Image 1 (spheres, rainbow, N blue to C red):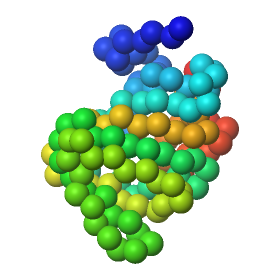
Image 2 (image 1 turned 135 degrees about the horizontal axis):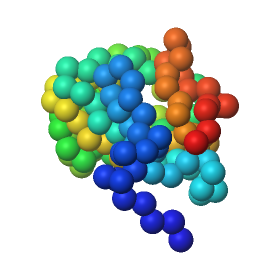
Image 3 (image 1 turned 180 degrees about the vertical axis):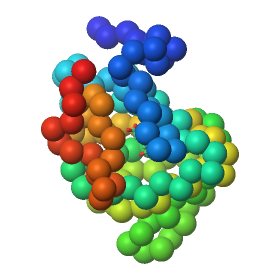
Image 4 (image 1 turned 45 degrees about the vertical axis):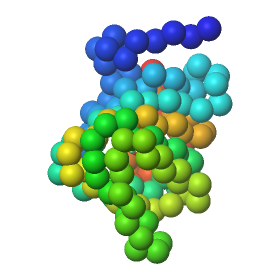
Length: 130
Ligand code: 9YT
């Protein structure tokens, strides 16, 4: 069994900060669960174009409010606590935070550890392991 505490993990290299967000990677590839699990903070006013070409991601909003734009269709979906979105087609999107948002995120395949977005908005498959 694996037991991890978010507050403790935030003090380690599991905590990754980038432009407009931070993410604490509570489960990673090395845990052999077949997915990774992260608690992400999207900062207020964030406007984040992303395109996870190499991963499927599901995101559940715990707190805060914002919106996600599907760049294939132009549809804009409101994000609030209780809403989940799943990028089941590696969907290119923009996530906007009206307020700070706390999100629970799952990635398949799992992240290695320290991934941040490349210039195309993707994470490399061979990210830095921790
Ligand atoms: C919601 C989202 O994709 N935010 C960017 C960070 C990512 N969730 C991560 O690495 O945990």
